[in-house]
Length: 332
Image 1 (cartoon, rainbow, N blue to C red):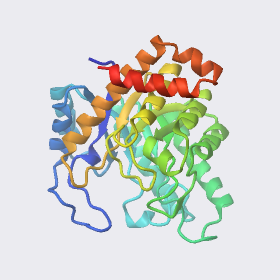
Image 2: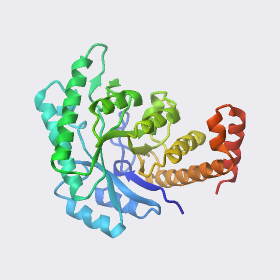
Image 3: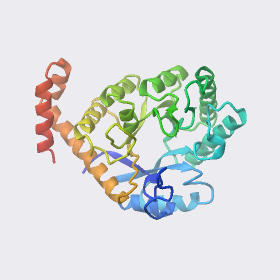
């Protein structure tokens, strides 16, 4: 039905806690069962995981078998560097050299595991690198430390001839009041400073939204530098990172993102980062899949009816609004 390559982060299809309900509303689902559930959903062909919380040496063999049974691929595997006590004030940018070394080792371990499964992407999410109080953190030194850690990780990628690409995933806040590189352009500055072909951006739509960014603008900027290596799709109302199904809050916004991806010939994965705290995870996944497909069909219709020429001129606002509306009506 569609040539979109869709993956699901399996951290989202189990019982999910939040700070108001640390026990969650559901039941814990074992990792293997989460992978099987994704494998049963038509059109979702990849999974994303963390090491060591979802994959490690104890279950890698079993995961490998399930992947073959369900014809799935691990698309993204990252080292978990924000859930342990040692990382409460930072990880790759922490002021303690031992913490930084541990975080680097965790990322390297994820890369080693990823090589076993030919994983194309490994995400770095700064998460706890930032501050909660004004002037708590010396940002000049924080950036120096973080960039040094990134360079060590990239050296490891090249020394081992790994094909995995490293991606920064910017987010403005949560779990810290402010996370370093909180906006797309900030992350892109660091990516361009490091200037390594294996280092780019994973754009999480929800993170860009809570930063009050124009996502169409930001994704175009990343693509201008050819640094969009991965995507995470979800939706929110720009108040919090709700991780609702893609396109459920603002479908036209999803169309705009898909339009840019089509425009640049993006051929990567469409990752789903979803948090169904109260609802059935499978519904979130299927709604996201269907909305991504529908948005792509809308884009195709728009192009058949002159959208490229209208956008080139940049003077057809009302006409574009009508075109988008009509194409959404007619897309199947």
